[in-house]
Length: 448
Image (cartoon, rainbow, N blue to C red):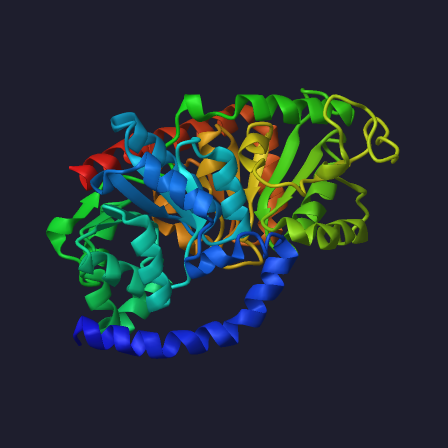
């Protein structure tokens, strides 16, 4: 099928999808906050001060680069690409668009001052056309999986080079794209560069319609970590907060990262059992979605724990929300209901349990805690990270258990055998060293 026909079908179906999906979007946006912020930008209407700054500072359209990253995870990848782009040429004009309020807030907080941050326009033809008229990029960079048909096709019509970086393709997505290959192959065929994370991904993207000479294996930008990126100040802040709660630096810490519904209590039950052997063990929960914090607290209370909320603690003070500090030796549980801190919390853990791997499907990113030098335990459901899990399991760089009944024994083994746990963490970090420099290699590919 020709591209024109694909776009016609897409543009007939998209308005219906937007109408039916609107209630769900509004509910989610209201729960997470920021639904009204710069709402007009989603329809390509930008404040004149934003446009004036962008156009005045970036008169050379050939050096203008538009980067799109949907949410927090993709924004973190985009930030590494942005720093590499500016390292190579500080005069480049960069604009970063994102879809979610949390992604937007992170981008505004972390982007260099010279980078403009906006909301991505909805992928309707006239909306995209207006946004491209105002931004006039010379290059469009899409992060991980954001191949929007109208945005890409209209950019290509204007002679704009389009790159997909840190390309992500789950097995489920690949099967869906293959099933509807007559529709998807013309879309993927428009991409000028596809930078993939693993060697096995080359043939997979080729099978979706991307020419082989346009596919580059550069490693994963998400896993491209360096010591200079360690959030030292934030770690010190978290340490001070723990001291304020009466937690000593020598106490073991069990951290559950990016948990989904039900997992906090599941891991909490394992924690309670382990407290019989380690009475001073601390349990820190970082839910994937902070708006679930009230639900998380109730779940933890239902199994006999007394959770404290991170937002109610004052750094450097032993005074919190009026609640009594736990008695010496009494289990302590902290629910982190603030955003942007998970990487710092990883550095303070003795063992990390990865969320969405027990009661959810697909798992969450296991690499950040591995790169933090921590012993990591996951459940059986890590389908979205199959390639990197294969790498880590091959070198015994983490532990994957077959079910929730094996969780407590796995954590116990980590806490009992600290030398072996340290070796496991070291093996994991060494396995991921191949991804160092991925952002720099990506920029070299897409910028020639």
